[in-house]
Structure formats: structure tokens, C-alpha cells
Length: 185
Image (cartoon, rainbow, N blue to C red; front, side, top):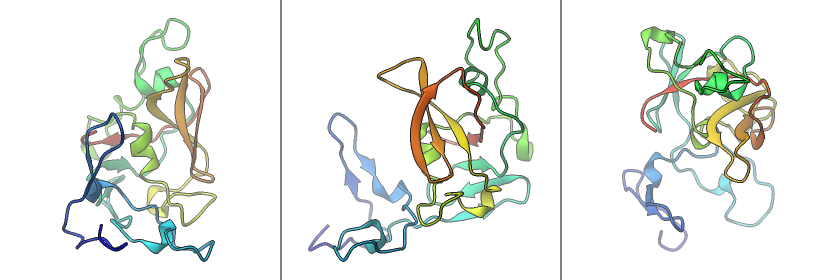
């Protein structure tokens, strides 16, 4: 970045967060926020880097053109605890080792998985709310499990609340919705 401007969109800019490997920003989706809420320069709406772009594949899936991930277009029917959604054995909550995403064959694919917290946040559209998700995803305002366990409390996992696009953690035994993804993590 020079003088507050970013280079051409084909330029790959890397950022480093303490303790983590560099991340190429060319693969980070933009927030989608377009409204200015202050006169201060520097809000998300002042920059457009990798704006959200999705392609409906016509087979019940949507491809995120920024990250390359393929998502199920619609929510899996029903609600599931985290153990069922993630396919993790637990004697109390998933003794049959149900794997909601692993059992999906949407679009003829059988390699579906529960998305990470970051992946699930990548489809939040901060320019809209209730639901804060692009309508190509068969938008539904509700809680969706991620595969990410809460580091400070291992009995909790992170979920995205698509009413407003925020993230919270909750007890893994709670029932929430599932939207599966396929592609590299």
C-alpha cells in the first residue's frame, strides 16, 4: 500500500498476523459494506478489494468466485448439534457418528464438509442484514455451525448468526443449522 491506495487487483498483497503465516489478500473476500457511517476515511466502504462474487451452478450449489469454495445453495433440512454436523463421535450426542455434511451428495459431489469459522464468515454480506447473506444462497436468517472449536472453552464451537452477520460460540450440544462447503481450507 502506498499513500493509502492499493495496487492493481492482479497484484497479490500479503499480510501477516502475529504468530500466523502470511495470507494473500487476493483470496480474502471484501465485506460487501457500501454505506458510509462516518466522515472518516478508512471504513470498509472506502475500499473495494475482491468484492463478493458468486455463481449459481444450477445444481443446488454456488461457487464463491473470490475464494473458489463451493457452497450448498440451501440449508440442510433440520437442526443438528455440533457433533452431528461435524461428524465427530460423542457418546452422549453422536454415538452413531452421524456426519451431516459428509452424507451430502448435493450437485453430484460427495466431499462436503462443515466450513471453518473464517470460511463461513466469508459469505456474510455486511451490506445487508436480516439476513446478512447473498440471496443466491437461499438466504435464511439463523445460526449456522462452523467446524471451529472455541479455544477457551472446548465444549463450545463457533457459529455465524446470519441475521446480522456476527459470530458467537455456544455449547456443542445445542441444535443449529448447517450449510456445507467443499474445496480447499
